[in-house]
Length: 172
Image (cartoon, rainbow, N blue to C red; front, side, top):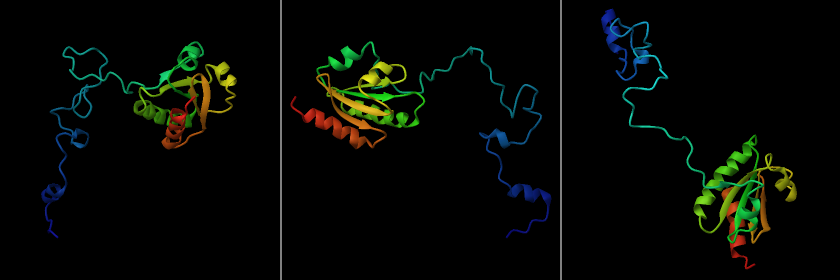
């Protein structure tokens, strides 16, 4: 242990604030002004004279599963020549969000073999009633306009992939 006798040596043992982290830096008259907080200028919502070359265009990536509605149901799902996977969801449903992430992965993996769609059951209740859907999430797989497989609830990705593989392997 070092023997500390003066107050100046105590301060030399304390970690010094990083120049990048001014939040913990001691206030000095060199950067403290009524218009600055911790040395930084206040936020401004005015357009900058020197715009930054970096821009955030979107926080979400492009969706691989297309939204289908009652108007496009017949042409997108029933008249499709390739098998179709449809996720029925509701915007308020937490488990639906988990299933949607899995469907996005599957849409990327089976691109060209299977078309993936999502349908909001609250906005299109006629379609949900037609297929006797009482709860969400539910995933239906169609081939030649006919419902072939269904996966009810939140399941691992393998369950959805197995249903797709069964439909792809069927000869009808």
